[in-house]
Image (tube, rainbow, N blue to C red; front, top):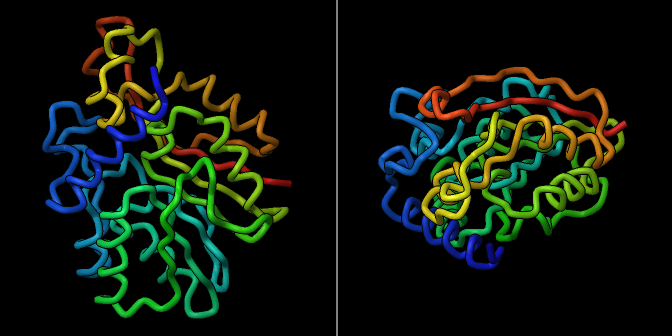
Length: 243
């Protein structure tokens, strides 16, 4: 499949969500059911920035500290950026990167509304991050890497921007078993976090091959909708370190 077409379809899908404010779970192609939605309601802004697009809580395992620089990949309307900004305080800084202009616009409006001056939302692709080498303490991502055709490039980029001793905490959709080709080639399934999901073991091998150490799976929640067909999807949250 053509990577450019995949990116265009994914971008259009999430641009529509950014404009409408409607969760991915309103679509039959989405990776989650309404009961699976994980919402963050620390304050009204975070609730407004949560479009129901996540599949875990990577901030819970990130060990974010006051003064840290944090990077969120596929930051959407900014929910994990704002939660991280509260954790790092005015001494720290949080960068959100998203490839969809409409999401960047929505996130910047949310930041202005909330008075957040320790965040920056940047338009860009997560396989070509607009972030300096060795400048970040923690990288987050929530149900986004599965949308990228070249996942190896993403993990290489995360390794590049992390400082030595830096960590990433990622929630993503992965698979077990063999996913049929008709699903892999379905554009709506790509945008819905399904077709681009990678086998769990192969996914973690990419993380290791990128140079990361101390890789730990913190949460693994399997969706059983297709288990009787010989394959299944799961939400996996893991952490890893650049030593």
